[in-house]
Figure 1 (cartoon, rainbow, N blue to C red):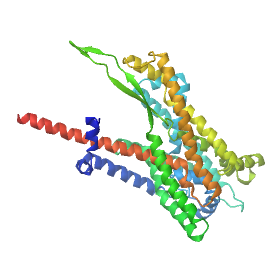
Figure 2 (spheres, rainbow, N blue to C red):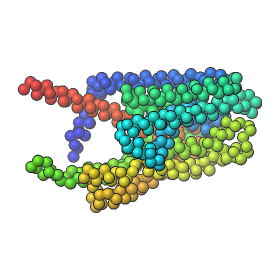
Figure 3 (cartoon, one colour):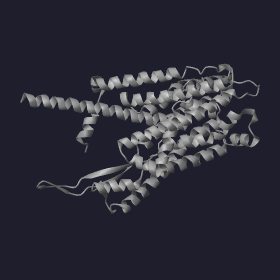
Figure 4 (cartoon, rainbow, N blue to C red):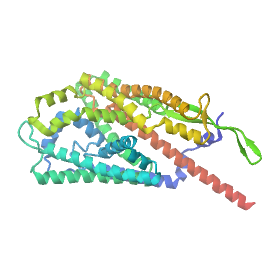
Length: 448
């Protein structure tokens, strides 16, 4: 039987959207902020020879630089001020989450409520600046490294160029961090996620057009293009299904006395997502695999032979890369899930409010059961992530014309951010309708 809340939510339509003035203002603000972000991806860093850098990027567009360029919305290809995008903040946030689970002092700060959360956010920003400085210096060094012809992408390489490039890139990261926070507070959805989402989506039409152009020239068979398009649609449907899947554990609350009446015990559910880790495992696994190639790019022709061999072994499309990538995704799935979800804390919270799972005593036995279920869900979630991320890699290894933008990580980000944003829009519409009903009921009560 459909509940009253579900029936009410199903009545949300375009008419209710037209009346939601606050929601429209939030959507327009978010759209304007994303336009500002996209404009910044076209502002080049001063002192870079675009022709020389374009040639270097063309040689590595299918691997390391192509992946970074995907998350940066094409800013790396143009060596723009937003070339680092928001990725240093993402890395800093993940590192801080891991440290709060390991360092007792940080864990104590985290448990202090809103004040502790602000303190952790401050530490995350400091770490973001540190990571952006390191990555900015690395990019500056790479631009000043001579290529095979002995020329550099930097017009006037030196300390001043390294300083200005690093400051520009760090400033770009911090501006995007501020812009993302503004979208979250004054717009709709998670601002940081929307910035990454906008970068990926903005480059998809060009990538698809390039693939179709290769089909016209015969470089890529038409059957392969059709297979990729149909497979992409099927993969999107599969990702949506898996991301919305969850295991609900039935929680029973005992009967309680309210005044002179004995209230019946209530039933609720503890939802456990199939993929608790989200898109973090593929991002971290691919970042670690790209470290050797990143080091080779910074050192240039003077890179040692052993480092070059490692970089070529773990290059996208190689068997060693895909096997290590799969193992890394599985490892980070379990690691990150153990950090973001603590069965012991969940069991203690249920016990504090009088809830229990039927057949299991509150406390340690409940925590063991939740951990038992979560471990098996994580195995399925890890397998799902490995499948989604490796399928595009296998296709690109056999058909070089398939663009890097059609990878599994980008697909996961686009689908998850879309689902989250749509859910928040529905929440705003639902709240707006509730407010209108409350106002009508007050007017009717006043007339009486």
